[in-house]
Structures are given as C-alpha cells and as structure tokens.
Length: 484
Image (cartoon, one colour):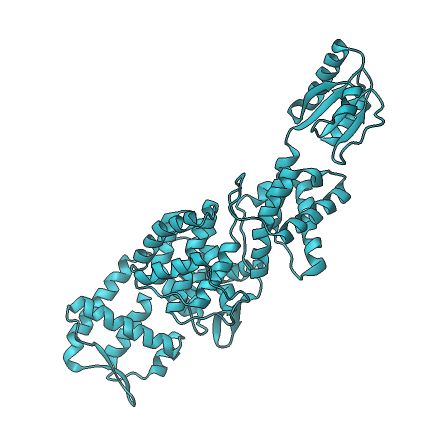
C-alpha cells in the first residue's frame, strides 16, 4: 500500500535508524509485512532512479533499518514520487466504495489495526470509517466462521484462510457492478501491477473451461477468475490454507492451469490447485440438453426427496416433472458443493423474488429442513430464492391434456372452448380420443379431462384425471385450475 510505504520512508528520513518494532507499532502490521514493504520500497527505488544494482534501505542486525547519508537525496526524490502516485491513485469516493475497499484492506492485514489508521488509508473521517466497519460486521454475518473482531489491540478480520478467500471473491464479484469499479478496487489493494496477470486470466480461463466442457454462467466465470487470482495473490503474501482438503488428486484441467501459470512465471501450490477444484465444482452452470458432466447420483436422489417433500406439503406434482427434476438436480449439485465449502451465492433480484413468489419461497425453504436431517447446514435466502425461481418457472409451464368426449365433435369443441377460456396458455389439449382408444394406448400427457368413467386402463402415476360435465360448470373449471 502506497500510504504505508510513504509513512515508512518518512520515518527513515526523520531518524538515522528505525527498529522493526517501531514500524509494527506505528502501522499495526507484522514483521513479515514490514520486510515486504521494505523490499517493495527498494524495488520502487530501483525503478525510479534507474540504478538496478543499488539498494536504498539497508538493515543492521542491531540498530535496525537505515538509509545511507549518500542516498538521502534519492530517498527524498522517491518520497515525492510516492506522494505523487498516491495523489493519482483511486481512493474510495462513496460509502459503497469505502465499504468494499475497507473489507479488502482488512482481509490482507496480518495484525489488528486502529480506526485512525484505516481513516488515513481511506482518506476519510473516523466517523465514516466507523460506520463502514459496522456495515462490514453485519455483512459478514451472511458467511460462516468469519467476523470482524474489535479488541484492545484493534480491529481485525478473524476467520479461516479458506473463508477469507471466499469472502474476498464473493464481494468483488457481486459488489463491483462492472469492470470500472472492479479495476479500481483491485488497483487499490494490489497496485497497478495487478492488471497484467488479471488480463491474461481473462483471456485464458474461458478457453480452458471450453476445452474441458465446463459451461459456467457468466457470473460464475468471473467468480472463478477471481478465485484463481485471489488464491495466487494470497499465496504470494504467504497466506496458506490451514489444512489440506479431503480431495487429494489434481485433475487434468488443474494441471494444465498450473503449467500455464508457470509459463507466466506465476506459481500455484498443489493445495491452492485443489482448493480451486473445489471452487469450480461450486459454480453454477448453464443447462444443456446433453450435459458434458453427468449429475452425481446423490444430487439426483437429494432433489427427488426434496420434490417429494414439497409435493407432500403443498399438494403439487413436481416429482413427476422430469425436466424440473433434471434441471434442479444440476443446480443442487453445485449448491451442495457451495454450502459444504462455505461459499456465499448472491442473488441480486432476491427482493423481487420474495415479493412476486412468496409461495415458491416457502416451498424452496423446505430444502433446509431436508439438509438438516443429515448435515448441519442451512440455506441463505439467496440460495432459497434461486430454487424458488425453478418452481415459479415450471409452475407456469403449459401442461398437456387429452379430452375424452363421447357425444361428438360439436360437444368436444364446445368443451375445449370453455377450458381454453378458463385456463389460457396454461393448458394445451393435444388430442381428442375415445375411451376405447385409451385402452389400446395411453398417450404421453399430464392430464386426462373426461366425461366418461375410466376403467380397465392402467394409467401412469403422473397422469391426473379430471371428471367433468359435458357443459363444464364452475366446479369443473375450479378442479382443472387447481391441478395447473
């Protein structure tokens, strides 16, 4: 961070020697971060004075860091350049940007920090920073096992490394609202140098996913790019995962990614690669008629049990809808990976779904009940709302029906007119047949509307039978509409 480097350089110009502990106390950072900042300043010095062999900041084992008297002029010139860079750098201009930048900054701190230091870095008042910190603390309640902790030592983000990575990528992916703010946020936390790797990943990743037939939705592609980028940056900073994941095999596509990164002089550890495999499995996919990757059996079984639970409570017939079961199984497979890994999936139209489809939200919430039977997981409203949209879309689909009428074409035609007037596009009558034809072969349909009693016919369980009068009355219409 340029602001921190400016303070370090000023301290070195004000005193002959500065002990490492003076930096850690002043800036609330670790000794490792001090060493990294000193190294960054020396690299910056070489780029400014164009003398690659020289070192600006030196160290003494006893007396600490210092700048040789012959280098004082160059040091002051570097300080002026750093200040100029800081003035041209993008800083948060709105409350939303301050929220985002503060969260990113806190996620890369090794030790607690003070509100005044955060205010200095954000170029904001302590009052506005305090308000943003409250918003961050509330926001983090949507994630498991991570929180903003305040103590006598200061403020810090507390949680597992795995969860911190999820929080960073989810927040960047869903709260930047476009490439301009994304660029501004990444430049703020990583500096101008971030762009080379990030731009390369933007070109390479879609090609990799296409080669291995991973059809992710656009937002998931962006999220996965961030997973890779943040994992690399966290490893560069020395942040490692607390434990190895259960899955130990590195997939072929992951090995290709590691090699491509190595060709770019970027190292990705094996634990980082396996972590990214987990991330990929949690991404939402585009439905295809022929999916390249088969849906896991346990995901299909979970979906079937879930739909049975919904049908039992609401009197629906979703279990018999093959298309719904297939698509929801695909969705649930990645959803189960997400909740087990601690991912947070954001739905930007959550409030609209809650307002427009309250019944479907209730139905979808039963999924949490099913999950709690075997696992201690629950679903956020965001996840529930995506399932609710499946129910809403399939509820509105046109159902197919056949009509059995034994009094001739004119009566059958009149019955169809009544049905279409009452049901609109929700129902399509595909055939008009007789009972004798039905006994010979049962057509594929969702519903049979009949004036004749059906006997000596073995019907599939999913076909619903509605008995009506030749001239349909209000009760006949109501029973048909209930089944839709």
